Image (cartoon, rainbow, N blue to C red; front, side, top):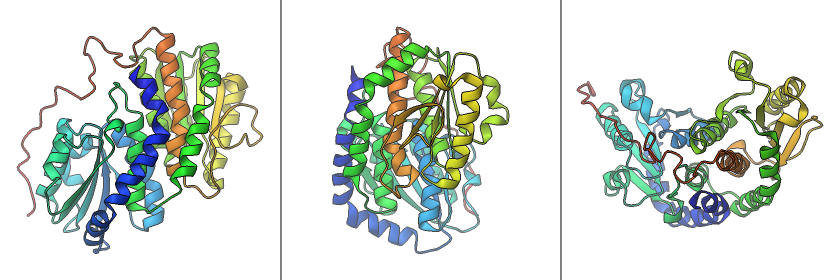
Length: 367
């Protein structure tokens, strides 16, 4: 089964990703030096589906670290409304994430930014060196392509090691070096809980799963929910929301069989909101149907899957390991429902590489 193997290989892929980025450091530093010399340069993180959630997880942390706005805008939004991304004559650094790089929106997003931005630069992070996106920018003077180890080009329907490896690669390029070995050890610790996670999910038999998190961890909540929807072919409904935003309507999705999973922030301020919603849902659903993914239990009467965190680790980096239990939840639900995780849509209703998208001509451009 590709899906399980690709979940299990992630710590190894993170160490391999570090090697790839290190080898390209001179080129990526030159690109960033040029692209960011103008303090007005807009940094946009883009991708579709899971690749869009890479940007959602990273953007808040990178904004704080780089001390300039970093926006996560999906290719599906950028292609539909490219002029919303550009502001007067400000340069744009487009950071594109793609597993295959063959989705129609991937190349179109870059081409549209080249068309409408006064000055454009491209950092392409992809798991497929032979994909359309990599090919479009491999020899471009205003771009660097970071092609991750080929094993990260997940053969399963759902993205797992591709997601986490792209998050890490972007962090290493844009934020600098980090302790990848500690991160890999945290991921290995999460994988050692596989049997316990599977047993818990099978016993709870959820009809719905809610993922919650604050700040960038809202992006991780979106990714956790998408994994469940994909691998169960929509049979187990799942949604991702922020810990505060959940009360504003999405809470209506709760049923007696709902499983609520909360990604708990390492930041004390954001964490307070995560713990509040965990306590509230434990009172609503019962403590056994609320699980916190965190480095400790924080005194909350709820379930707890431990993902180790070195003190001071930003949520975006910790999220690389913290998504592993959510991937295992999705896989467990898929198998329990009699689905084939590697291809949950044998009829082709939903595809590994999106089909049916027509890219329409956009005639406006720089004035």
